[in-house]
Amino acid sequence: MKKVLFVCYGSGHVRMVLPVAAALQERGLAQVQVLGLTTAAPVLRSAGLPLLQFKDFVQPGDEPALARGRELVAGLPSVEDPQESAAYLGLSYADLEAEAGAEEAQRRYAQLGRQAFLPVRTLTRILQRTSPDLVVVTNSPRAERAAALAARDLGIPCVCMVDLFAIDEVRWIGAADYARRVCVLNEQVRDFLLAAGRSPEQVVVTGNPAFDALVAPATVDRGRELRRRQGWQGRRVVLWPTQVEPAVHPFDGRPGDPQLPQRVLARLAAWTLAQPDTVLCVRPRAGEAPPVRPASDRIIVTGQDWALPDLLHAVDTVVTLTSTVGLEGHLCGARLIQVLGSVFEPAMPLARFGIADAAVPADGLEPALDRWTREPRRQGGETAGSAAERVVGVLAEFL
Image (cartoon, rainbow, N blue to C red; front, side):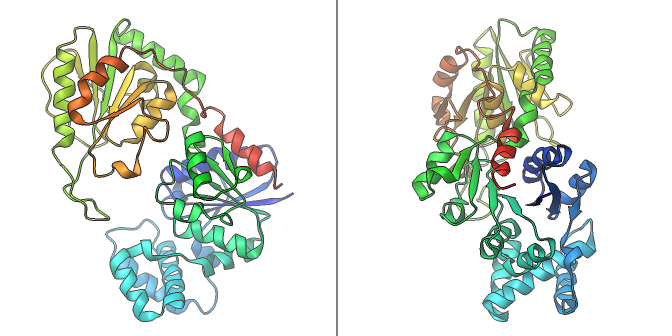
């Protein structure tokens, strides 16, 4: 049986990998292992998938690297697995030092932190030890990117799964020799990578497997029942997921507008109060207090105790700056309005990539609401629902 090694970080990246790796394993299509990086490890353990970590590949001669790793760990606020963190940071730093020299490595790490890492040597070691027939990565930089480069150099086929738009990652995913296949969200992302130089046979529209559960039939049914239970039939229901806008972009220093989210919410609330057939749902982020809003039974807080997938099937329209809840709403069939002006907007061009129905400045919000809240929900699930199956089909080409 062929062996597949997945390499992934946590958060949305491991959620892309889980359904695909599980499908391969459950059907006996391949022997699966997952190199779970940082916060991916506990998720993979809970899912019962075979987990590998950096600490599993420590070998004689790594003592100085591990000592350096322990020094770096000591500077972190908290770590779940100190041994793994020391191996991850220490081996990655040793690779950076081998590539750039001690002085330059120190300078890069001081400036960029972990973003300075691209541990190709360590990933080459891991691939040589595990001997996979296929490597699967997502679009994360650092160790995932290093795994793809190591696989290329070793002649091992590699498939890359892209979660969103590859705006920043196109710098390496756009290279013709980076992974044999690239799985993307929709046709617009495919066109973007083709324009960057990928060939048509290399880029496949699969959707993102992390979003498959959004359009499961049971989820759709629960959303319809939620709408009925809330008495929203015949009403135009708008969802505003809250977000924070920083004064300065955390990476490139561009100035932001911290008051933008509150101004947009104020306009949404005023528009809602002026339309008797509308309801505004305000969804704070986890651990966040509800924002200030007018008192009205048509402006309600739908907190974390409301299941988001169900809610997205119950509302008609989502309004956002750059929240991924907007993309999820689109996949569920809701209309999407993006309000421009966020400092994070260049990384989330929702209209450009066929996700938002409208992208407007704050002072153009009301006309957009007038139009798009009167449009019926789309069918949804354009590339969701079977994304994992589509990715499995791509991987099967190499098994």
